[in-house]
Image (spheres, rainbow, N blue to C red):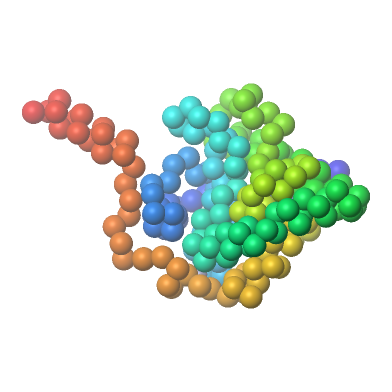
Length: 203
Ligand SMILES: [Zn+2]
């Protein structure tokens, strides 16, 4: 049975600026903010499956909050991905849930694609991210999906969030010191380039 689609959350300019500050680079092609901190800051960005430069982008749910990404990186460094891949080979029920998570990811990407008004992205058809559906290659992807979809959709994403809970939980706000709120918002190279062209044309 299909799950209900996730609630939509169209990003505001303030959201996009926050994402750029969190990541330290200009963000592009963000269609939704599927998960937020209790304070309202984005935790995850949902990106169009084809970027405006034409490149296919399979990672629909991208973890953006620096506290979260750092905690997940430490788990990866500790070898948790190999342990989880092993679990998948031993636990049939987990493997089935993980397969369903893969299907949910594809469904959600389709919804995001349509919302962005894009044609089907044939290059990544049937392909998700993070190693789904049979392996675990990126815990950031799984945690991003778990936060976007809520508990019970991606079992290994849920497990990842549980493992980082000493450092971050959905109930706590770590935004104040997680990134520089007063920094200049990184600007897209493209807009600078366009501006330069316009200046040249008008001179
Ligand atoms: Zn916060």
